[in-house]
Image (cartoon, rainbow, N blue to C red; front, top):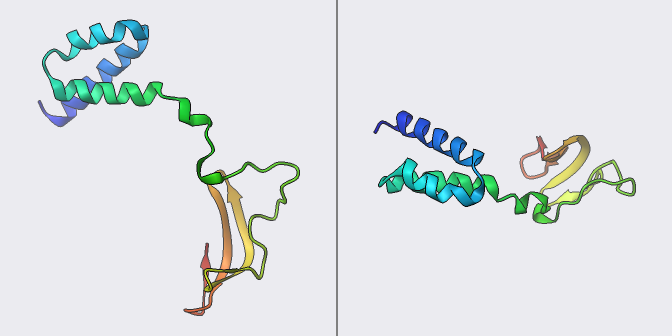
Length: 114
């Protein structure tokens, strides 16, 4: 089966399986995937990823959300030295993925973004 056709089939089976109660999915997959173990493994992998929401509430790598008590200027202050190489000049911005700072690369003598 061509890869695009295989992917379309995987999407169809996953979508149909998600409409069923969890208790009925195994029987549906037995029929839908027949003897195609590769197809079955791909479908089960996607279903497991879709239904495993336990990690969504975990905060990775010790990152904490900003609160009223958290200073809004960011994690680093101007003048701070990082890795004995970068001197923080000023915050550039912050968003959902982190913070960006203008810094001086003391080794190369250039302005960089961290």
